[in-house]
Image (tube, rainbow, N blue to C red; front, side):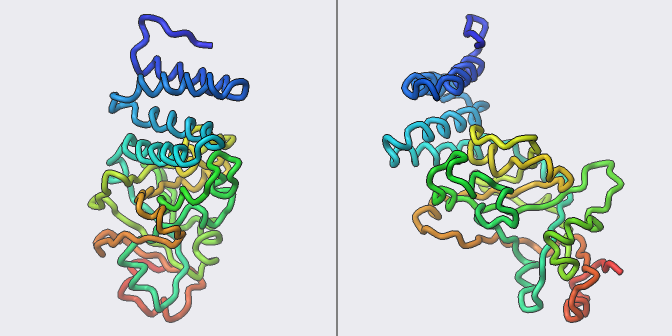
Length: 283
């Protein structure tokens, strides 16, 4: 185990204490909680360590759940809030984003004027967010996720020759087997509140629940999804917890944020004839 010495700064000490807690919690919950509290003391006043502090609160909530669920819930909530506050911002403004959606002619205007954000448990693939589908993966009360809504988008990396709207698997999974559309967005003028962010998915060989709800689950996926080059909007509102609902939420957008719309091969005639909203058609 790494040791603490005089050359360690506060953040380094906090990380070491947190690592101690992670290594010993199965042998002694109380000793682990003691190390977590020491880590919290190190991180608490460091703005640059908000995500580390979030990790501590998440781990502490997990260990306290069987003893005091109300207190544990507060630590889970703090963990979510700090993870979002501590995340980097602004990089999304340099990207072009793509969204494959199925379309009903009755709801075209709604689709083009707002972005739908889903409850994490509503993702297409139940293994996309295992923390939502299985309480044993790290969050024992799924209702805590009611405070979160997520929007998923694809990105073409810089200098790539790939045309994202030609991605066959995306049309199959999300574009209703070519009966839907693909929307290209420019979000450079889209602003988020302090408890919302747009972050890039990290693809990993194996899912681990120990990194928290935001970074460890909502912004982490299996490397099997690496081809999607996905980014996500993570939106948090504490008031949604008490409402006890998993209904989607929406962000209104200006029409200028839509750069192009690509129409699927099998898109219904009435959608194709709605040519005033389609800037490019796949033929």
